[in-house]
Image (cartoon, rainbow, N blue to C red):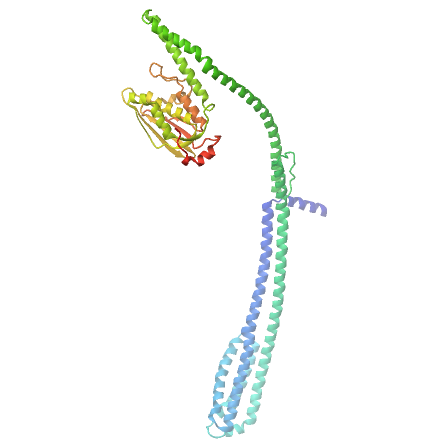
Length: 534
């Protein structure tokens, strides 16, 4: 039964959590320290009380009793001298003794207020003093000066006996006061010894308690956490097959179990990740092969397809010039269709090549002054700007880490579109803004042109998507798709502002330095000192 009870108690303790152990430990420690503090305070108070009683009461009472005896001796000496000689000078110590007697008696009464035996001794002394003064001192002091007092000789024997009784009362009083003083001194010494033992015991208990707390923390928290940390470090270093042994309080054991479950899950995830990596490697190989084929297509499109297309375009143009007006109207119309189709096919191929090169050919990131890029863009579009009378304004544009060629393509497409898609009855007004928003710059290009309906806000960024026929507005429908690809390549986003109704507002963001650029960190650091790109 005793073994089962011990086992049950051990199981109960094993279910305690760290917080419960800490609460119990703190409660026990506070209780022990409270008991020790109360005991120490009681001992200190007892010592202070005895010390005050010895110094302020017992010792002062003995001293005052001795002074009272001295005052009475002065009275006896003065009265005896005055009675024998009649010299008034002998009354001076007598009068002084009376004053001191009254003061000492009053002081003793106050000191012995809580001591009945002491007050009884004081009354006996007072009675003896009163008897001696009534029979001897006052009658002799009242005798005429200048001659010996007959009363002094007459009552000499009675006076001696009366003063001896007074002296006996004083002696008894002083002996009892000295006895009480000695007892108080012994009690103080005993209490001080007890105080020393108590404080020594308090120190030992505090040290033992500190040792128990330290050992409990070491075994219950520090060691289990150290072991758990060692296991976790081993797992983090790659030893995923190392099991975690639960130790310590219940919550730490649960934590160890959860980490072990996480370890097993991590092992499973690593197996899945390894399989995914193999699949990804295969897909990467397929993607590389696809990119290689795309590059071959771009080469073919830029060389092999361009040559026959140029021949078709050249000969159809020759055919148009030589036989214009010699054939019927239908033939001239068909020839014009062929020339226009060949030219548009050549423009489409060139635009498609430019689109495919974004992020693949032009990726030389460096500090780019967008104000300088804007000036170059306006210079390139100067003919169409002069023809339309466009007014283009812009805020101060920042310097960014970007590809300068792509930045030129971005601004040329955006400004060119704003000039192209104008209202026919008015001059276009275009304004460019730039605002810093955290790590990004937000740019807007706002015009007062024909605008874009909200339902086409996403469609305009799809390659070759046109909202108007080529007869109304020229172009291949690749401009905004090119802008989107450039912005996303630089870590930003681009969209049409659907809330703006006075024309078209294109808003896009660019980072100070796109992630992955080779010299992004250095360029951001030296951005303020970089020379503008020209």
